[in-house]
Length: 371
Image 1 (cartoon, rainbow, N blue to C red):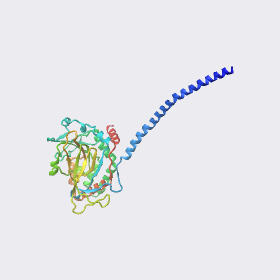
Image 2: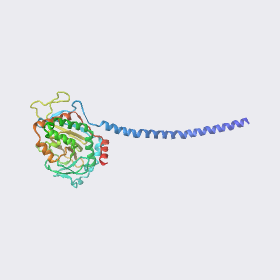
Image 3: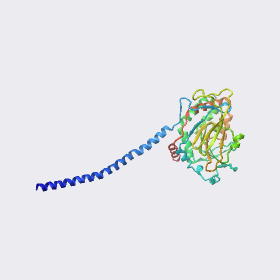
Image 4: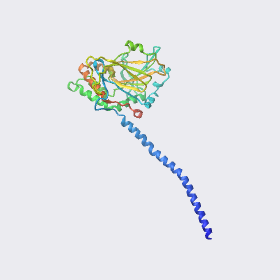
């Protein structure tokens, strides 16, 4: 009887232990799955938000304590700064999704807003747009000096407008500081008369810096002959006192004539008496961008022999104004006020840590515009 009871107890113990093993075997992978899923939930959202916050925090333009960009000298030895930067690959890729930058060749002829200057074998198209938040047309001057008339300028594509709006937002501290410095240099407080510093500050306050866009598309034969003959060389109008150029497709070279004095230290350079401008060549590849004052230097773009697939596309962003605005600007200009304004512009840009907005910042601005 004892032996029988022991066998019965052993059998119950064995079954119980086997059940525990089975439960443990099932529970182990189930627990691992739950644990892994929990980890993923815990880590996924904060990581994304953290990255966005870091991008928003990092990509903010600011003014350095000392010059970080060299000061060159352009026409009539006027000081200017050339800031070179670039778009990251994700941002450039998203830019190219807009129709104007990715359409088939045949579609260009059907775009009524484009200025068609095709003279085979040279193909040139140029579109004039604004980069303000509104989708409505904005009455302003055509930036092409050969046209130079006011018209109802259409809005650029949504992403293009969002990029330039984000650029203004990201670098707001820099341009707010520039505006304040221009007002300090202006004689408006004493005379109650507008001068060039005051008017430039007003355009910045209105948010019209980089508000005028020229989208230039080139392919076919090169412009080497015009470059050599001097026909391609020019200085821009007052709208290019702040000029942001962004290359989206193709390759081109910016030629400019600038006095580049020998360095007196790592940052500041002063011209030597009688020093002549030299020709400076700066390659512009897809994603490259520069911020400068093209009003103040003679320059010329160089285009190469290309087909449509390797076409050059560049966006030139300048001040948005009307003919009445710029005519008044030139009327109030004096040598003294011009010198003060250009010196403030060069001195401020020399310490400007300009930032190109991230794709996340541009997409955020796009959502704000569409709200």
